[in-house]
Image (tube, rainbow, N blue to C red; front, side, top):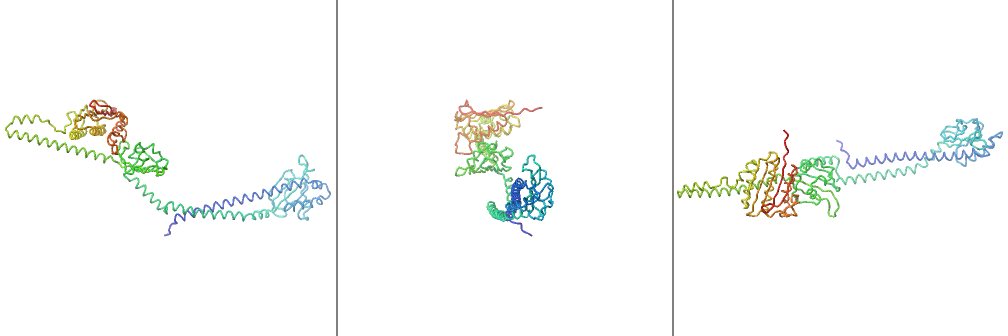
Length: 524
């Protein structure tokens, strides 16, 4: 099986062919231009000579002589030899020659049509005469040498053989051929250098290898679960895989500016560089973002690669694990409290204090420490379970949690409500100290749902209230890069539904977070 030519040889042959074809074409055009220039030069010289002869007094006056050739032939021959022309022929109005390089032809009629110069016009072109094919010029001879209104009394024809024109052109061809041959050789060597340079630039790969690598790259890029976004030095997205478009949620990214498609924190990560990764929000989805940065060590703008890993499942798993841990602690406390109650009942029975045992059982509050209150049942099983876990967590932290629920939220808002309430309660629990109070109110009596969370913690400083919902802003330890996500997510969820979130001072002494989640009215 014949082995395909290497890319370097293909480039060399193709470029050499192009150089040769272009050089040949340029050579043909140059020769044609050179031949035209030679012919124009001869024409100008012949026109000048012919007109000079036609206006010579000795020539004009000789037409009245009994034998004009006696005066005209010597003058014509002198001028022909001085002008390096093949012939100079003077004729009368009938076309009878008065001069000719061959004296035997004098007195004969010309072999070509003299009608154009005899009509008073100048003519030039190639004709075949008694001396062979020649390039000639014919001009009229006027009486008294005056062209204006004078009578045409004859004509002057001067010419040079076409073979002499060809010989003149051939004498100049070696220089042209040498120039174009040198250009072709230089072009071939240049093509070889370009082929070698391209070969080095593509690391010596062949076209089929490049195609295979591109196919593998596209396959790997679009099958990655991580989002990959590549931005050039101008800030234009040059490539983005399916996972990146899904995580960012802005439609096709390629060809658009990065500052128009990426959220603020994502854009900051990409520009500043974050090799270790930072937890940020892509819309409402927490992601781990890593980037090489848009500038190199010298401060020059270079391309950057942004890697995005979906953190929502892990984030939810961590929250669930935290909730399960809180629930476990609550169950352990409930079991301990129940065991203590059983011990009291057992002791009273052993002592025979049956009435006291019955009174003690009646006084024990049903439901234990995981009961979020009678109103919570109206919120549905998901919110009730969430608040039960938060209640266990609050008792572990010695924070009094009170839940107030008004109405039953619409099913389409429950998922967002779980996110909002969970993040707000977590944020409030972190702000509270042992002995503080926490109050949660969910009002679903209107067309939407309104959530209010009050705490008696340290509160939010006035200077920070406008920015507390911005991503990355936190009143906690700012060195923890996982901070500043929950409240930002709360506001994004609220604004997606057409609502909003705000923070104001709480009557309990800490902060009050208020969130509105509108519900679209159903058209019956």
